[in-house]
Image 1 (cartoon, rainbow, N blue to C red):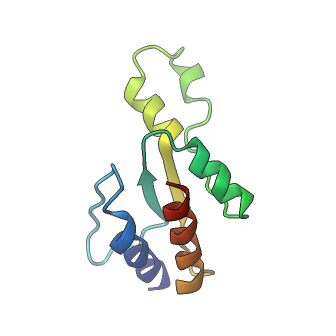
Image 2: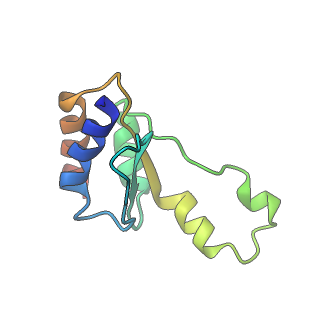
Length: 105
């Protein structure tokens, strides 16, 4: 339930700027809020500076395909920021994430 609440709290604010349109069913419990932005390197660095871990998915993907015909995959790899929303966190932590994101963009 906490995951869902955290997801909804982030979605209420971040869906307006998120290039990734997220649809979840009412019973699903997401692991992350997938924030996709153009040129997200600065934001990722700012989140990490503030001790907010944001994993970078699909490491090594381009080696597997020799980097050929992977423009969409490369864009996702470079710009998707999976924001962790698990039960260890609550509204205060989500508000801090929102503050950093909106202050950096």
